[in-house]
Length: 150
Image 1 (cartoon, rainbow, N blue to C red):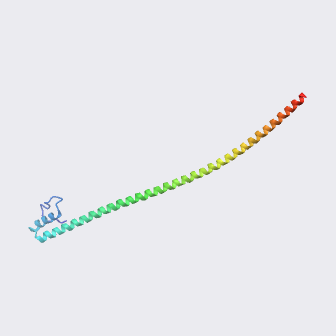
Image 2 (image 1 turned 30 degrees about the vertical axis):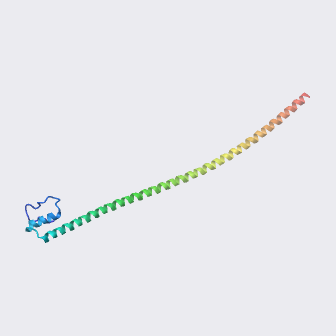
Image 3 (image 1 turned 90 degrees about the vertical axis):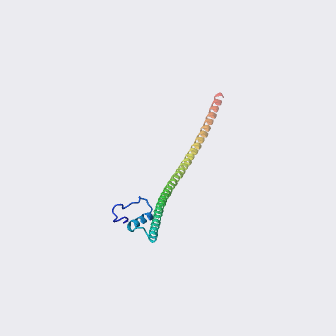
């Protein structure tokens, strides 16, 4: 910054953090005696421009930081959407698998019901045949007993 160059000792009498205008005025006083109003105005303009530039720089940095935060949020949102999409696809696949299992179970149940129905018909037929045979045998035994009595 060239402030206080060639002055030797007492290069910087102002503590750090002293406003720029005060430092410029102080540097002018040390360099050439009391400053003129033109020098004071020039120092004030320089200080104002510097402050304005610093404010713009800080605002730009803040804006850049906010942009970076938004970009991060957008990335997180995109990742969350992608994960949700994957979970939805997986859920759909599981649902389709369950539907397939239900179809298979329904077909197996229908086959079992058909076999059970056929087995019941065969059993009923056997029961009728056995009953008919038993009735014939009883009739034959009754006839044989009647013939033995006669």
